[in-house]
Each structure stands twice: as structure tokens, then as C-alpha cells.
Image 1 (cartoon, helix red, strand yellow):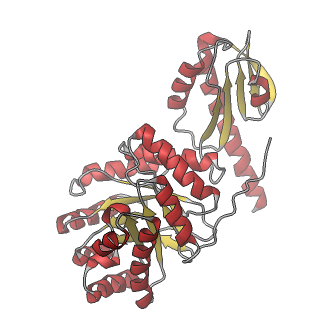
Image 2 (spheres, helix red, strand yellow):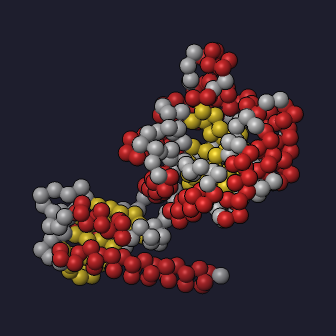
Image 3 (spheres, helix red, strand yellow):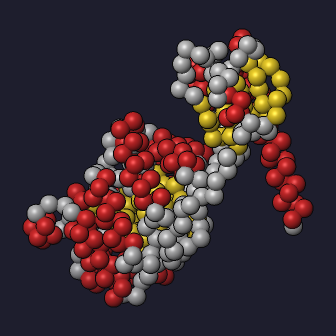
Length: 370
């Protein structure tokens, strides 16, 4: 049951955020944003490192004041992951972080003020080899656009974006990416689809202010999933009122489900029913926590009975089919029997052994190709 991925990515201009390529043929990057006080350097560094460990490619940090800019410089020295500085209104803050090894400036040229100030920021970005991210949000549209359209609409978001883009075009600065976010799924999807054919730059996807962990995950999965399915999107952020690390985890699960990226274990588990021969839900909850550190691309099936268990298990690296006894499969072949008493312990051991074996196989393959 291996199908070719039907998603054909939109061709976009490649830019670099630090050492992470965005657009072109690069993998879709996963981004999150810190929610600690930026001036609390230790707390922000710790959060960034946790996000990186969870699989974030890029982290955005809010820099609302000059004190925060100075703190950002200290943070930049403590972490290795590319950082985006989120800046509004005060162009002097953008100029300062441009000299502090920032990897990308998130600004809206239109709210920086006079064109000479925008030019100063763009010149600093050009001089330091820094791309810019234009971020348009339905909640902060320009007043004249609010009056023109009456309310946020896809057309209003696109018109706002094109205003900012026109400024960068006049300044001959093509190295930017763009986001067009709303909390409404339909508005967001329509806006991105409209802009995708009008510019060549990479698109950063997100459903802004999507909600809490459960509701926000659902909204983001639907909205971003619709766009990713059509090949639109070069970076994503799942905006949740939750720990930023959860944003990273959901982002990875989203890309893995669409076969756009792979990292760690892809679990296939049944929802359980009265046919189950072991507690599937309890087993999965414990197993996921235990093997959360594994980064090997592999699949694991945990199925509670013999109706679908053997079939699913034969398509995975490790498979468990509930029965009397429970049957375990490795690489699609029967490999033993497991009892309920030590089920999670045995599964964890087998998963780690298989992960180590796959890592060694891939390392040897790379060595032989070179």
C-alpha cells in the first residue's frame, strides 16, 4: 500500500533563513514563536532549545523594544537555530537587530513609516544578507482597507500584501517571504490561493490565533492541509494557545501525514473496541511518551485485534496485532509473541532496536553511494 504522493509543490524563489533554505526545492520548514519575555534571556534561550529539540527549523522572537533588541543579541549567541525577529513600527529596532546576526526580519514595510526609514531597513537587510518576511494579518489591516472592504476579506488581505510588496519592488529587494493570515479558514485559504499565482516568493502558512491545543490543531490542520494539498506553502506555523513545542509537534504530524517530510515514528493505531486483546489507548499513551526522542523515520502499528492487525503490521517496520497471544511483526514478517504484562517494555525495546538497525542501514547506504 505505497502510493505516489500526488502533491506538486508550487515553484517559488529560494531564499535562506540562516542555514535553512526556504522555497524552491527545499523541504517545507516548520516554525514556531517564543512566548517568554524576550528580555528574560535564560527563559527564551531554554524555550528555543526545546523547540529545536522538538524539530523546529526556525524560531521567531518578538522584539518590541530596544531593550528586547539587546536581549535578542545575547540570545542569538546562545542558540544555533535560525531566528526571525518580529518587529513593528520602530525601524531603529530593525536596524539594531540587523547588526546582531538576526537571520530574518519580520516587518510590514507599510507600518515602518516614511520611505526613507523603510529604505534604511531594506539597505541593512541587503548589507547583512538578511531576508524579510512580510506578515499580513486580518486583525491589523490598514484603516483605509477596512473602510474600503467593510471587513477583512481575501481581496483585502491580498491588496494589503501587494502594497508592502510594491515597496520592496521599488527598492529592488526580492528576498522576502509572505504570510496572509486570518483566524477564518476560508478567508485564509482563499487569500493564499489568490496571491500564490501573483508572486514568485515563498509563502509562510498559518491560521492565526487558531485557538487552544485541540481546536487550534483541528483548524490549522484543515486550513493548512487544504493549501499544502495544492502545493502551496514553503514554511508553516501552527499557531496555538499552547506550549510552542506543541506547535512544532503538530506541524511535524501534519507534514508527515501528507508525506511532505518524515521524522520520527509514524504511529498507526486503532481507536480500540471490545475486540481488543490489550488496552490500546493506555499502551499508545505510554509508548508515545517513551519513544518521543526517536528521530528515525519509521512506522509502528499498534492494533488491538486480528481483524486489521496482521494486515497493518505487515506494512510497517514494527507491528503489533492483538490476539491470544499478541503477535509482533518486524519489517512485515512474524517475529514473536508478546504478553500483556510486559507489552510496553517489550515494544519499546523492539522499536529502539529496529530504529538503531535502520539508522545503521541508512548510514551504510550513504557510505556506499559516496
